[in-house]
Length: 161
Length: 286
Image: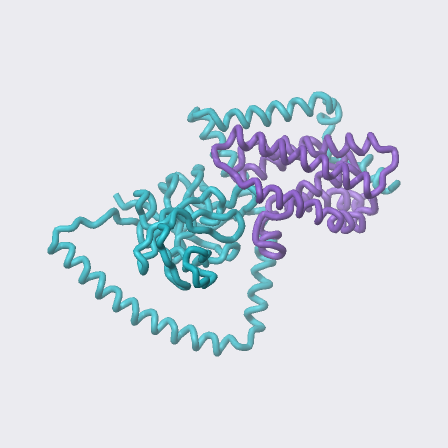
């Protein structure tokens, strides 16, 4: 029974992540702000890769990325690359630090998020003809950074890392 | 912590095959596959487009099924709220009165339409393209920092084509941006990349309406001496030859500054995002 509960607890992160990826915009736009303003999916990928490297496998991130791209009309494969990159960066930055405190973790998140978003911008500008607004992207990054401690606290309560 | 380790060690999700293939192989494999997908975006092969349309359809309908329980729960919440609304009888009476009034206006409009058609016939003016609307269910609605999309339940099987307008009760919502076999994607008017030629008939002014990526849109290329007032209505002008003319978009909101040159205009759109269930796709009648 306890193993069953552990399995549910383990996969709950996957379920939450998938549901947030496919309902991200509705959740945020309806209840929090009128626009694509927080990147919860990136926060989740970073958090679970930073604290529990094996939880989100590369295959899982690749498939969820494809689903996300299909739904959002993004170039196929862009989000998969971003998710995988973010996951690798998070686990690499975690390995480099012997002592993990919030400061180190937040700096790692800032670096990872910036690199990932820059990558997505490069991919998008090369593979997609549609232009985008840098200001909106900057707002998205800043609000995601501000929102990170809140979501992190919530996840810490749920998953005890 | 020890519990987590236990959970990780007993994870059955990581298949035996994946365990045997080292991660060193998986990582470059997925990166290469992703880039192949990306490069396929630039190719114009029919087979690749067909394969993508199939994948899109599969994902769209799977997401619809996965989301069904969540939607059901949220719909139940809405129904419960409606049931508990004690002003419902009063509201019902008001709505009935409104319907009566609208019906009267509709009859009047029909009279003017007939008169207009007769005059056109007498003057020998040809009617522009007639449109038929195809009803579509919104399967999914998605927004991110780069795009705003509605995914519709009809695709090329129903004759949907790129750039066709989507409307709700004659209110313009956006246009088709991608067509799959059994589903299609529509770009909402508030999308950053949305540009619609519009007209403000009460002032005789033409402009372009651009989405701002959030929940609104702004007017571009307004004539320098244009003066607009609150509640001036905006319609599609149809000057691009693609979108039907005369579709209602919204109304003007101004900051009412006395200096006309400093006056700023925003647009109150005629629909509310995230509250749409069904739309119509306008198709030229052949």
